[in-house]
Length: 427
Image 1: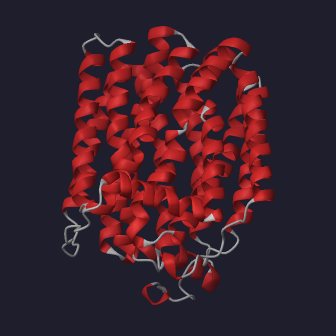
Image 2: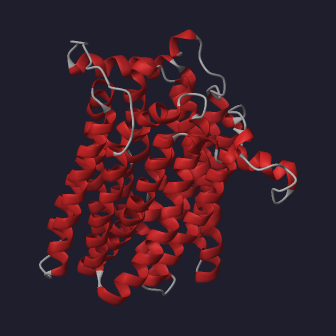
C-alpha cells in the first residue's frame, strides 16, 4: 500500500524506488504475517543449522556417500507417503494450532538429536530414525504452512507473501549453514541441534500471538480416502497444474543430488571441510534470496510459465557445471546461480499452484506440492548416493543436471504454462 510509505522526494532512489519497495513489502501490512515472518525466520536459521550438521555428522560417522543418501531418503520418505494425509488435516483442522503442534514435535526431535550427539552416543541408525520422525512431522507441517499463508494475507497479497516467505527461507539458508560450519568446526554438531531446538520457541510464540477469526470445525463426513482422491482428481484434470507438479517432481528427484553429495564434493573433490560446506550452502542461499526478491517485486503473476522454463533450464546447466568444477572458487561462483534458478523455479510453481487452487482443496493441492518438492527427494537421495558410489559424485551431478534441463524443456513444450487462473471452480 503506497500511501503507508514515505513521499517520493524523501525516499532514497525517488518515486520508482519507493514504488518497488512498496510492492516488495506490501504483505507486511498484515500483523499476522509480520509475526509469522519473524518467528519463522529465527526458527529456519536453526533448521538450516541442523540440516548441515546432520549431513556432516553422518559423513563423519561413516565416510560414505551411500549413508548420506540413505539418511536423506528416510528423512523425506514420510512426506511422500503421508503428505496427502497431512493435506487433508490442513483442510479439516484449524491450521494455526496444527502448526503449533508440529513445531512442538519438531522441537523435541531436535532435543533428542542434541542429547545423543553431545553425549557422544549417536549412531547413524539413531540419526536416521530421528530424521524419519521429523519427516512425519513435516508431512503435516508443510502443506499446512503453505495453505495457511492465504489466511494471513488474503488472496490480494498472496503472490507477494509467497515470494517473501521464500526470501525468508533462503535468507535463513545463508545464515544457518554459515553458522553451522563455524559451530561444527569449533564445538561439534550437537550445539547446532540444541540451538535449533531453542529456535522453535520463536515460531510457536508468533503463532500463539496471532489474532485470527475463529475457525468452524469441518462438517464434511467423507472418508479420508475419498477426500484424498478428490484432490488427486482435481490436480490431474487441470493440465497446467499437472505440468507444474510434474516439473517439480522431476527437478526434486534429480536435483536432490546436489545437497546430498555436497559434503562429498566439498571434502573429497574440492579439498575443504565443514566450513567450506557452510560457505557453499550459504552461497546458494544468496542466489535463492535474490530469486525470491525478484518475484516479490513483480506486480502480477503473468509470465510465470516462462520464468519456470528459464529457471529450470538454468538450474540444470548450473548443476552440471558444479559437478564438472574442481576449483573451490569456481564452485563458490556457480552455487549462487544454482540457488537463484532453483528458487525462482520453485517459488513460481508455488504461486501458480496457489492461484489455481480452490480454497476447499488448498491443503491437498499444497500437499501435492510438498510431495513433488520434498517427497520425491528421498528417491533422488537414494539414487544419487547409489550412482555416486558407482561413477563418483562429480559425474552424478553432471548427469542429473542434464536430465533436469532436458526434462523441464520437454514438459514446457508439451503442457500448458498455467499462467492464467482457472475459471470459477478455483475461485
